[in-house]
Image 1: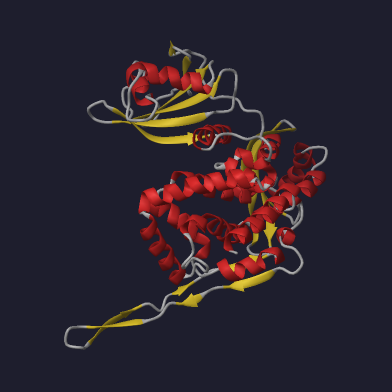
Image 2: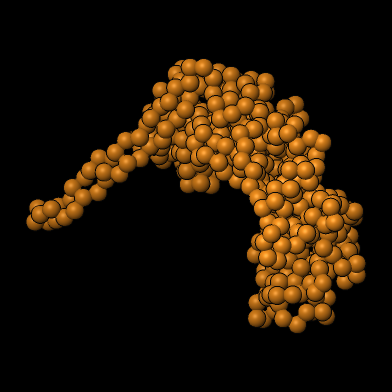
Length: 446
């Protein structure tokens, strides 16, 4: 069934009081039975998929999330919750957890092996059904202790050594039960938890060698990985929501307007740029960027470019992600944009170039391509947008990072986007960050 609505998550929760199961029992079940009870083959016990359709001014109704319920003998039980990316952004991790039914692991209570900190269990029965054997690996140590133990005892092409662990410990045990399989998927759980930490898929060659093919991390694992990267690259902080993002020390320094920390990291970024490209080459690169539409790039000191990149990316990404961000506030699409918002259309058509052969005859043409972006800009950003919003400006920071494979700036850009996607656009922290980012950019370009 499909439920269409134009409600914020908070308003929807009020509608479903005392709980969603009662809503299904009192509203959905009677509608189903009224419609279907006379149909041939209709059963009184069944499963229901309830698709919640939210409204967007841009797209109309779209799939926000859906639930699966089991209806047996008059009792409704929630068995699945499937949020969209928009729902994950709007509800946050706590909101998703509140809607997700308690997990029950599809696991056979039979230990395949006890190796170091790991207990191995078959994922289901038969756990080698099909081409992939699924194995649960519970561990009773910290993540760092787990990885250090694997690294000390096994070797592999992956950074830690899980290929060696699977080859020497998991594969022989799986072969005792499974004759035909092409891959092993290892699901890691902290001892006693039903929430998966991460999963890794290992492919098997015909010669029997093991190679990691996929690595999927939970949000908790991703957050921990960001913390470890920040510790290694920048150090740590805990004074604002930005500290949990990649590059959080730099973003937090902008939030607090800590000029010393900003200047220190800017020097590191400048050195990183120069090491990768050489200052002269990088300046030429920025000149080309200016021709491609990055306003303000040409003839600017390379050491001062990073705040310019940040402001271009921030204005562009803020406009792109505004619809999903607005749901965090409980308002509608326009919640992230304030009175006086301006639409800036930078779309343009590239110059057409005609080519001639050696005899001077026409040999084709190139160009005439429509490029550019439409920005929706809050009043406080409009002056900077006049300088930095161009047809290619919004994506240039990411392009530069990928072109030069820069570690530090790459982390900061990823953290900036993560913050734009996940933080409440009307929160005091975001408003303070924006104020200081504008202040920083103005101090750089003067």
